[in-house]
Image 1 (cartoon, rainbow, N blue to C red):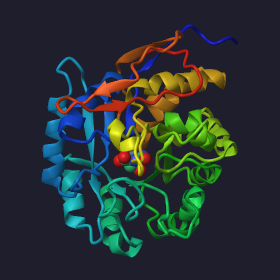
Image 2 (cartoon, rainbow, N blue to C red):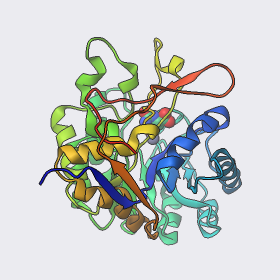
Image 3 (tube, rainbow, N blue to C red):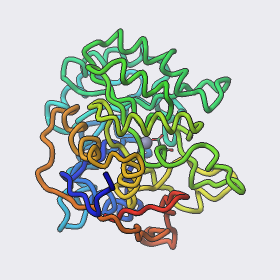
Length: 347
Ligand code: NCD
Ligand code: ZN
């Protein structure tokens, strides 16, 4: 069957977003709120969001940064540190502030210096989350410098996640931004306990894109893009109709100058193009009829939330999105992700 010229689906949610703070928040919030009704907000600010009061204040700042004509609900997360307080975790969940908690292995990625150094150090917190029905969101990479950067996700599954799911069988876990066929298989092997999010960029390019014609910092993110066979596994998972996989953009803005330098930051700013790129991928796979489940149904089901009632329409015409977004004050901008191949869908 040929692809349709438009597609109407329930408004999607984004289950993994970096909105930053201050002027970056002012620049970025609108782009996520235009596309998504709700978003899981990453807590890796400087300093990280570890207290209920901090998350609640950050949620207010996000709400203020979203234009009044857009309806958008930020879903807040707690940044787990060694010795994370089980009482604070349970209290924040009961008070309706935390929706989940985030595990960053220490030094795995941007702003993760305060992350967890060993799973023993968060066992009490995870027990409290298990009791409270609060999902754990996992940045699934080991940080051992002896492990090759392209193997860090697969090694994490063996060395950390396998033990974690056994130790906390009642804990719901999201393996975030999966980038490997091993990640796909792990999620598929634990359908009751695990979900997996997949980004638009990991569906669109493989690791060659980072080096095509020279080093290209705007394709650099963590976990880093892998070989083509892994990208294909992600495309199969996203379009498989399995309820275990759902949308999480990992939109991670950094100003252009901090990407285009000798030691550029990890993160792809894809919020303005997210649904267009997902639609392109599903169209290429001939599976547009499955986009709604991936983008708008599977995530809410995992989190025990109702799907959105509102609808959005995507149109089969080339996307028209600016290359850069200005950051107010200071003359800086953020480079918007554009895949190398044309995107024939507009939002
Ligand atoms: C994220 C960031 O910039 O905060 N970067 C990234 O490459 N994805 C952190 C993260 O999610 O790993
Ligand atoms: Zn992220």
